[in-house]
Length: 402
Ligand code: KDG
Ligand code: MG
Image (cartoon, rainbow, N blue to C red; front, side):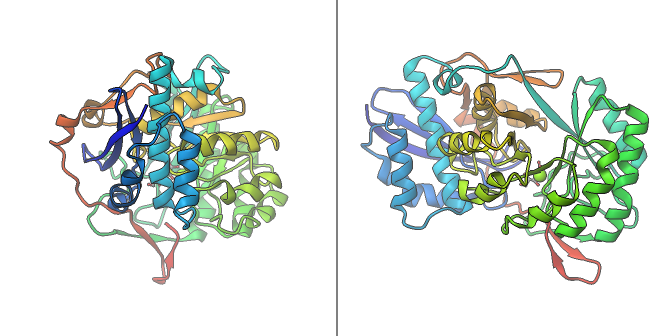
């Protein structure tokens, strides 16, 4: 079997997506997600200019060799652009292999380890009252795990909070918008938010929270400690993690479980975090961390240290990534949870999929491959629109982490 061609499909059904389609001489094709939010066209160029020409004529069954060829062969290792491109190729090749085997992808990974996949949804509001309403709605919809984010008194807008009546999509402008951040206001407010949620909804629901990289280790340690009475499922991205040792200080001060990794693209980004048991959940995800081939290594390594998976699943990870992620989640023994934000109707018309969702739980479909495809003619109706993520400044104007 040979790869005879590959093309990159860029579309914007409500938001930008980059999709790779690899075709073979036997007519079987595979699909991979190559979306890197706010930097989409750099991955398009990486694929079209540097990857696709090298794929032609290769045997698509040699997934591992092609992965090594693209990783080692570039000489320039790691980085979000290159690793997203490699992930797209890897997922498309796993899709092909599973289609040829006439098996759903999870069967190739080792078969299913569970009956259904627990997901968490987002509940947010501009203030505590509206956030409580959103949490109540999520619980009514059947979710057993809810990520809670709220507007902070004294700040105009903050991460994870939709403007009234709108869906939350952070990459909402052709040039980066600017938010204002105050760590002091946030730290004074966050325990009150979780106190209110636990008082109203009790202890049976899993609660998650995303700090989105905004604290220093000692500030994160304070937050983790003050949230302990509310028994979070996890506290996410409390600190930026380029320096993996930063998490040691947080870990030593709190029993609040820690999750990190949605921006990681390599097993080396989390080796020390996992090996030192500084974290409880690894959020590195198929599309940004080199595909199924590398994620399998990360998850297996994590399993040795009691670290579970918790795949990133925001709306900028396309249904193709979600489809592949669900097959992985179905198999991976050390599964923790899967993030889910509902896709819009436009997105769900351009991408077709056979996974099912019911009352907080996903199950992958039984179609051969990962079960997700793209309607190329419909995709053409939604041309790319430049959209960038915002930046964050402290109240004195200093640029901070968004
Ligand atoms: O593109 C950035 C988003 O995917 C990110 O802000 C979402 O932090 C996020 C999350 O946990 O879903
Ligand atoms: Mg996050």
